[in-house]
Amino acid sequence: MDTGKERLPPKPLLLVQNLQVCRWLSPFILTCCVYFLLWIPEDQPSWFSALVKCLPVLCLVLFLWVVSPGGTYTWLLQGALLCSAVGDICLIWPEAFLYGVAAFAAALALYLWAFGFSPLRPDLLLLTLLASVVYQGLLLPHLQSDTALPLLVYGLLLTAMLWRGLARGGSAGWGSLLFAVSDGVLVWNLFVQPLPYSRLVTMTTYYAAQLLIALSALTSLGLKAD
Image 1 (cartoon, rainbow, N blue to C red):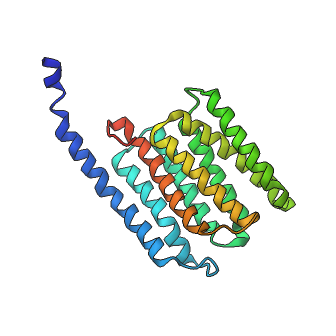
Image 2: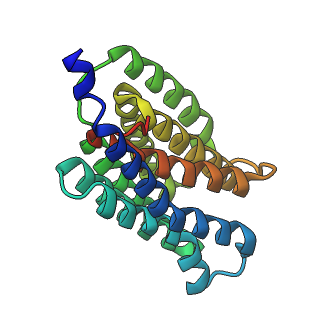
Image 3: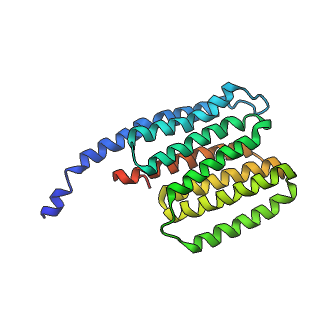
């Protein structure tokens, strides 16, 4: 009986924390709505369109700074989000594509570092490697020599990040999976063949992926982010 009573007082605190999470997620939701409502054509690159595209990700950096301050895991996620924002900006201009790939590769490396290597889950490694080999095998014949190696390295990092995210589970796992889907659709649409609604699929899965991975930092607070 005493143990059950001791668990009751934290409930109001948990409610306050959940309300704080919802409040600080509102800038992310608002900026996502702005991006999709404006839907600036991709053939009109500008610094304004770059800002609109990366603002939701920057809002997640602020979100983590407020609701999950400190800690190596949070810092790594924030670093990955900042690198992603740089990548978003670069991908606005086709001539900066490889710079964008480099920025997102840095983001994947930081996510990989954050997720760690425990539990190891070799079964998930085999599954992700198999999916990666099939996808890369279909993609490589369509790549130019100057993009083949960078995208191959990027694909390996993405595979490793997906493996570790799935091994971690929860929102990190779902976020990693959506990140891989987003990148897969984007690259296929650019280099293999145009896909219907590719931009919509890419951006919805991308923003959802970043949100889910950011929410994985809240497990240390005892919130049900997963």
